[in-house]
Image 1 (cartoon, rainbow, N blue to C red):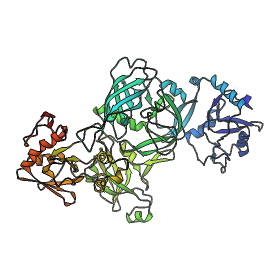
Image 2 (cartoon, one colour):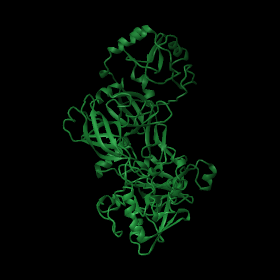
Image 3 (cartoon, rainbow, N blue to C red):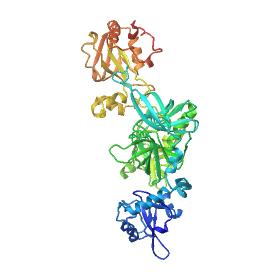
Length: 626
């Protein structure tokens, strides 16, 4: 039986099938994780393989037609993979064998593998996408991509220093991190944003070279966790290869993740298959964008490395699922292209669009009847509208969004993606360019309406992240004021949701701005002095008013304090608390307090025209100048 197979491609844990011969004899055919029909093959023929302990392999004699249905995804069903190979009539069944190779067959397979030339193993398939059949070329071995990518993947060394949000005038100790990246057109290097976040110094090293080269960060998109680097050294670019982008891979297609994970210093290659494609929470930027789940191991250090199919990049490795084994995620090409087009068109990252609405599924029949939705119409119910978006001018609460740009939205909020896959309609919104228009079909009081809305990125009242910038602060008479941000709450530890002040946490997650540039200003802490004795416990409270004027943002608070014309200065805090200071005495105490705590300035640089400018209207100079 083995003599009929000309070439073997050794695999572990893959599928095996038996093909009927002309004379009725069972002929083994092996291929990677493919499915076949019981209308063509019997269960007894499958089980014959297990008796011979035949491993998972790929035969050169396997014809394209035998594997095309699985790659296309036509009529695929995925029953639980068990050795008994049970399945109904006409269902697709997959048989996996956990049996080990006997010693003689190990030697045979090893000898065949050593003589196997991976650079000449190609085959063609036809994959069916949303727009119909698509010709694709697949390598018989994913490591062809590895050989081509060795001159394009680099290791990144970053020194970073994050701000201390409890003491916003200083940084935390610097730390060193490593990651991966790869070269694309126009001498640019793509990596993850979290690899270079809060960076102070970046070096890159190409494969096979002991030399590290200085790199500059050209652009960063923290929501999509992507960054672009530039290396000025001409020596670095000698022999480097540029990688091109491919398409979104189909389910069960194989990918190879290339990078520099922990556990060693050299390049590493990990193979896997695509498990699902859907919007996912991006841990670094907390955005909800499309991601591809694969079963390849993605470990610290892999971040920023390419996921390859043949010689095309189909994603960027960026995170894994904590507490699970071999569940990793890669950023797909549409998200990467959106980021790159922002940088090419504007010179910087702009962001991903949002409708600015909170929606509810309409799967309940009684709810649809109440909304007067005719039979056959589907959509989602609007619960809340962000006040600073263009959609707030035309949409109303209890409207039902039926379609986005002509694409019908199902009652569960999904739209057709490809084949029989569905995806949240938020993906269609996020792929729009900032400033672009979209047509919304809305059901209002039983009547259908069409609205053209202008889309753009959503700016929350409490920023979700503050990478690559210093926190704003203002100090007066020992009172430390700062805008509330989620990184400030993160200082309470990994369980910040439960350990941070409950009132501030709730507002950070639910409050929306009512005016552009609005901030939620808090009294972070009190630096003790005789001028503020008795106020030391009034910390972590929102500042509502200064001398009866509502606080708009931190800059506005500073202006109200320094323009005070009264003898007393009053701060109205959250929960009805009040702080009253003698204005002249507080001005005199401010410099003393700054010097005592070795604070270089009374305000962050973004609140001052110049970092060396004296404190106007207070009559005190910077503490570091004395």
